[in-house]
Image (cartoon, rainbow, N blue to C red; front, side, top):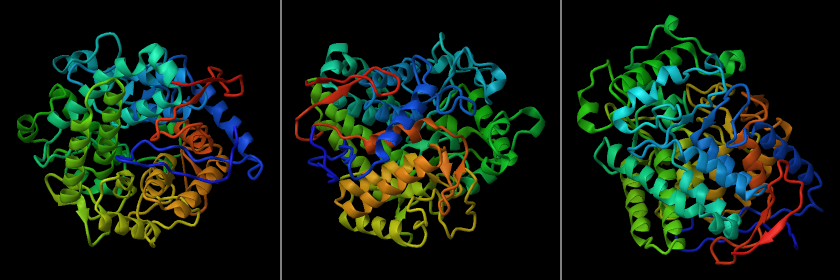
Length: 494
């Protein structure tokens, strides 16, 4: 296969599913080594049915981690990438929610907190249809899954059709979106709300400081954090943060994981948490476009889903865009707009239907002093913000999944030079940090867990050259079911 150094984006129509850029080994001699190292991380984190984010810090299956991991795994083994998503979706609840953690019964209870005995999914979640044969959490995470499923399918359409992959996951993905759209529009404006910081994925973002200040924390003696045994305290959320996380999760569990607005509004726990977040909703919109493509691939109409995605995009702009900030902001349903700049407000750059003036302002903000870090990566929080901390989780460090999303957005909007620069910074930082969970945005210092699943997976995605354009109908992909990605390849065409 002829490889060139040209980075291309093939976007037409609703351009949500993008090709990874190409890479010329002759001009980037470290690429092969980086590929092998990333593949080894995923092999080490593979359990046989899914991939853990980190063997020690996060020893179970996480929802949005698995979606990002599947996107990278498709370059090593489309079969394993399909299994990753299938394992997660097998734990879906009857009401359609996809839980943010699927617990492994082989992991000791004290290895992670909150553990299965805290969530009590099979009993507390019985009315919501929690599965009886597997233990899960009761909250959710960002809906990247349909986008991941579409990209995994396109890596090897022949294998996908032979296994009935899309036909099996489509009803589950449709139910997942239906749950979010029908049960989580707590603000009544068409957008989905999160009811816990863990649901949005950026746990201790300064965006949550205001809403969380209303929450009475659980007593410190009522829980024991397991994360500090494997992560530096200065890199992690504080004990006060955790006390509030535990209180919110306990209240949600004790009301049977109910979501409807009447029950939500009736809760008086000193201030419930309900926030409309731009990145969560942008990823739902991206996945709704992808779900339309999946439907069309199965011979069902997809125009209605594209139209819904466009309506959601309009609602996102109407409710969360802020001209003064030049980016999207979060909306606290009890306190109004949250005047903090975080990477969440840049993620909607991924979407194809944004007004031109919004896209232009987002690009200006990304290049401006609030997010222009010395490493070339995207900090998780405003570099000039009063709460900025370069090493503490989502209060400043640069994360690789959000960098991948912004890079895809830049490329989709024709910003080739900026996308190339971010991709180069990503690959350099991922390799130099040992595929760290996140890094200092100015120094590149590794923080959090080493050998992190989605860092390795998304490194592969930015390294890999796919033979065929997602949007042109020319399909192809390598099938390799080895654990390292160095075995033989069988070319399949759908």
